[in-house]
Amino acid sequence: MSTLVATEFCPAYAPFFGVMGATSAIVFCCFGAAYGTAKSGVGLTSMGVLRPDLIIKGIVPIIMAGIIGIYGLVVSVLIGNGFKQQMSLYAGFIQLGAGLSVGLAGMAAGFAVGIVGDAGVRASAQQPRLFTGMILVLIFAEVLALYGLIVALILNTKASTAEC
Amino acid sequence: MSSVEKRTTRTTSEQTSFGSSSSSSASSSSGSRSSVNISSSTLAKLAFFTVAMIVFPIATYFLTVDQYFGGNATYAGISAAVMANVILIAYVAVAVMEDSQAGPAPVSIKKQQ
Image (cartoon, rainbow over all chains, first blue to last red; front, side):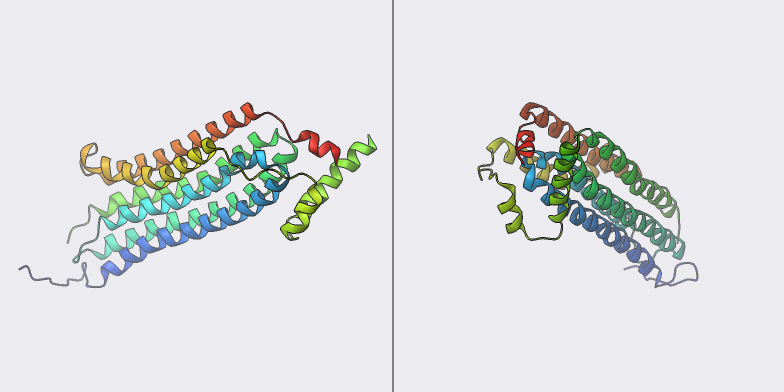
């Protein structure tokens, strides 16, 4: 039975920041993924009325929005692996920063994917050569969430070196 | 040339009006009804990609974190992100291949309108 002692560098409220980081990673990424899915889905259903053969191609923006949600999930799992009851405030702050970085970057990327996916599927039904252009713009929008994921991963490796 | 422009603008206005109007007015004005039969191969592809999107990235993380990367969670997270993008690339490839097989069928319908 080890006794837990709260020191100045490892207070009792340190896990709060870590848990908030894990929560904000998945919550904000899901905001972005939901907006991306909804807006692209509206465009897809409008386009699919006249061109049902293009529906399978038009699901690509929705899959990209789903990947943004997966980024948030991966970072939440990563941060959750580092929880301890007696952890340093430094590790808690780093985990909060990691979660916020991927979460807000994912929300931004989800907004971009939604707007571009909506306009892109509607336009590529009329001009098939726009499909490649839409994919390129969607990739650039998705890479924003990837940047947030990279920053979160780099930050999270620092949290493991904290000692209490 | 002006008739072509009128036709494309009419299709554009029809398609933009779909964003606000209900679906019943859209189906009555389209003039062509597609059958409700969805080919089983399309459904199988969609089901596979749905399950793959849900399962593969997080399974990659948990499978590789201990076996391949010796507990280093960062590399396992990177491999999960890579796996998610691999599934996306596979879906785009399958969609483009299916589209090139089907061919531009409903272009004639647009020209009738």
